[in-house]
Length: 110
Image 1 (cartoon, one colour):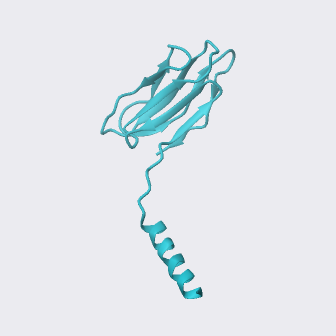
Image 2: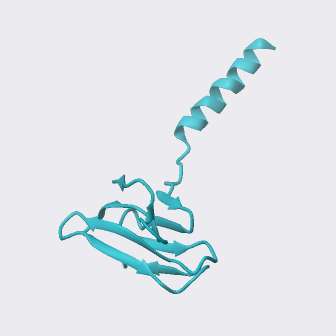
Image 3: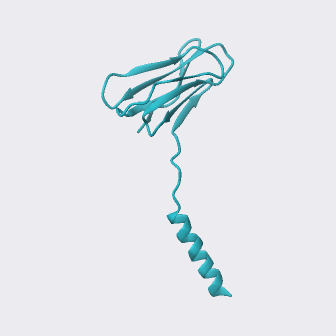
């Protein structure tokens, strides 16, 4: 009986290490905004996730080029997309354009 449990355990362990896993998209958020990479860092999406009348945006940069701002001013439940490029996204954050200093997440790097 112990041998059969060991054989089953070994088979399950081998399957767990051999099974492919889906890559998880990286995202960051703060009150009111969420920014996520997509297409394996080919682009980003900025989403407004709060009905607070504040714009949301991401400060971001591709591997080559200057830093950019992707802004979403369309309101709660909407998203803006950077478009996909082979010039991959190197870093981004997520911000809410609220009263006083803007509320921003930490920056994530590829």
